[in-house]
Length: 118
Image 1: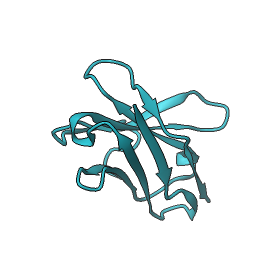
Image 2: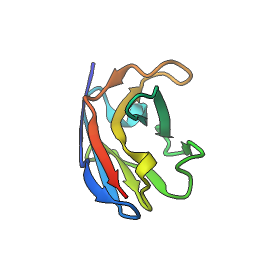
Image 3: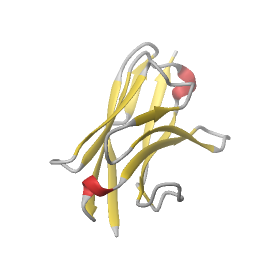
Image 4: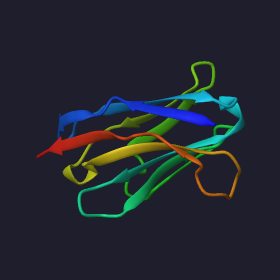
């Protein structure tokens, strides 16, 4: 079992920055990959970024160059640094744990709201 708790969301002006955090408990954190997803109002949930257990990363095209995912295994926490925010980044952001490569994400946090004002 893995429990995930996100924090760091809020209201920000376009062009601003936010850093989301996701604290994990349960299984050995360094053993599995972590991802960030988001769901905008009226839209499907979409992939944002992923970081593997060895810290390799990949991003959705829409956030490349603006968002950075990182992890601190000692703190059992994954981060999403979001810069140059746009109104279209407004969404509920979720972190998720992928225990086995290539499989669906197994555990999800409750989400944190990010609102970007024009």
